[in-house]
Length: 261
Image (cartoon, rainbow, N blue to C red):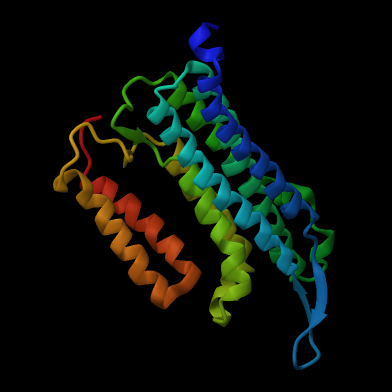
C-alpha cells in the first residue's frame, strides 16, 4: 500500500464508505428484529402482519445509498481514489444493498407463508431464495472490480439500485392504502419472481447508464432527465410505488440509449 492510499485525505472517502457499511448493519438489525404480529381486522378475522418498525430498515438502506454516492463524489473531488477504497466500497455495498435487502425479502416471504394454513411452521428451505439476491450482488461487484471496460457505464444493474427498490416495499406495505398492493406483497410468488428478475439484472451484462460524463451535454443528460421526470410524476400518483416505476424506467432507458461500453 503506497503513501497515497494511507494519507489523511485518502481516508476521508473511506470514512463515508464505512458509514455506508454501518447503515447497512443497522438495516439488517431492523429487518431481523422485525417479527410477525398476529392481529384482527374489522370483522374479527385473524391477520398476520409485519410490525411497522421494519420501515427503519428501508430508511437505513436509502441513507446508505446517499452516503455511497457521496463517497465517490468526495473521492473524485479530493482526487483521493484508491484501490483500497474501491474494494472497501464493494464490501460495504454487498452488506447495505445485498444482505440487508435480502433480509427484508426474507421477512416478507415469512409473512407470505404465514398467511397460509400452518404457514408459521414453513420450512426454512422455502425462505432461502431471499439470499440469492446478496449472492448475485456479490458476484456483480466482484466482476465490476476486475472489469476495466465500465469507465462510462455499467454492465448489469448496479446493486444500490436493487437495494433501493427492495427498500421501497416495506414503505409501500405500510403507507399504501390500496388492498391490491398489500395482497401483492403477501404473495410469495411475487417475491420469488422479484428475486429472479433482480438477480438476473445484476449478473447480466446489459448496458446500464451511470452518472459518468466525459463531456457533459444535453444529450448525455437526457436519459437521466427522463428518469427523473417519470419518477417525480409517478410520485404524485403512486407514492412509494414510484420507486419501482423509476427503476423500470431506468432499465428501459438504459437499453434504449445503450452504447458500446
